[in-house]
Length: 193
Image (cartoon, rainbow, N blue to C red; front, side, top):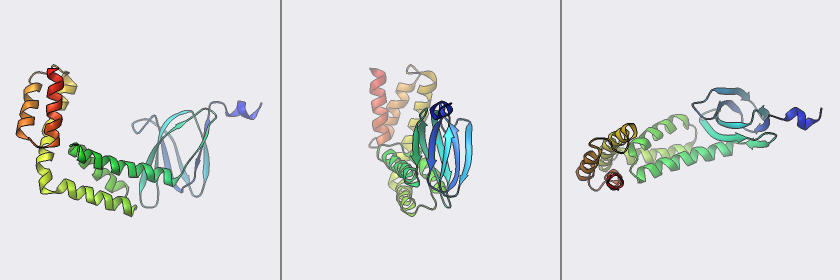
């Protein structure tokens, strides 16, 4: 038996940061494929596929999406996982800037809990929290919540959902000047086709 025959059907993942790692098959909602504690450096053999890897370090929780190739080798470092956490903070900023403030509010809360030990990221999250809690954001938050209800109706009942066009027009008029009203107007235009 050659080495390649013995390793067929697995890929290798090197973990370079200490912590406890949990591997979810396919993503966060998938079954747990493995759980390991690493004190220095470790290499694992995993079946090929996509995984969400969650690492709990001394003060923070990080995650990364990876894909293991059959016979492949890769490394997952603390810097890789920090970069993903930073991109999530960037995503929360984008959500705020584009009127997805309800989703941003939830994401910021989740990130604050999981990234408590990352000073730079926590500082950025504090700025986002202040933006979300500002008085001038109240109208945007109300508009976003109203639009979410209409979007939920559209998802459940489809584009021909009864009264959706009227609700979108009302959202656009009631919350004029908000990003959510702009999105409602865009959806209304699409419905009218």
